[in-house]
Length: 214
Image (cartoon, rainbow, N blue to C red; front, side, top):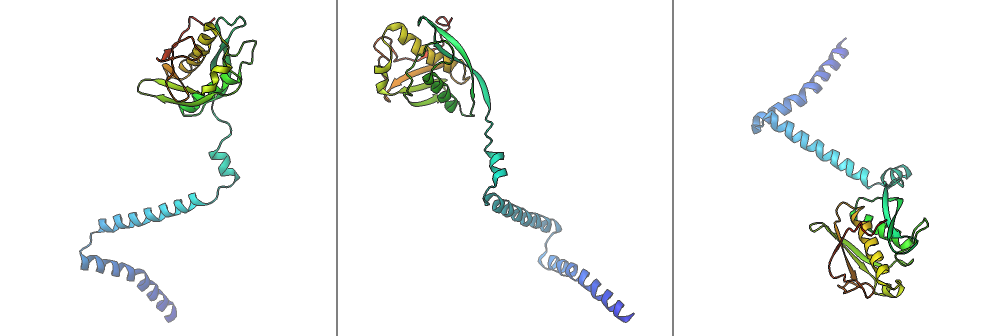
C-alpha cells in the first residue's frame, strides 16, 4: 500500500512539477500566456516547414512523376490554314494539338503544324523543313513576332498569290487560335525585312484576313 501511495505521489509530482516550473518562469519574467501560445505555434510551424522541405527534396518515385508530369497534356481543336487545290485561296483544316499554358509555346506548335503540312487534300503553304527561328508575343500590343530563317526564301514558291497565301496562313492560324494575338509581324533572320519572297511588304504587322479563305 505504501509503495502504491509513493508511486502515486511521484506521478503527481511529475505531473505538477512542469506546470509549477512554467508558472514560476512566467511570473519571474512577466510572460503572458498569449506569448507562450504564439511562441509554441511559431516553433511548431517551423518544424512542419522543415518536415515538408525534407519531404520535397526526397527523390520522386514513379507515382510522383506520373502525378506531376502527366503525359495526358491538355488538347485543343485548332483551325490550320493551308492552300486549296487551286493555290488561290486558303482552306481550314481542323486538327487536335497539344495546348500548353504558354501562348508562345502554343504558337510554336501551331507554326510547326504549318511546316509539317496538311493532312487532308490541301496544299502546303510553307516548306516541309522547319524554318522558324524565333517567336515571341508582345501582350501589350497583342502582336506575335515570327522570325523566320534567312534561307526560307529559296524554298518558297514564286508568285504574289503564293506569298499572300503563305503570309495569311501564318497570320490567320495565330490570330484565330490564340486569344492574346491580334496581329502578326514577320521578320527574317532576326531583322526587319521588306518582303518575304519579293512581292509583299512585311514591314508592318498583318491582321486576320477572312476574304482569302474559302
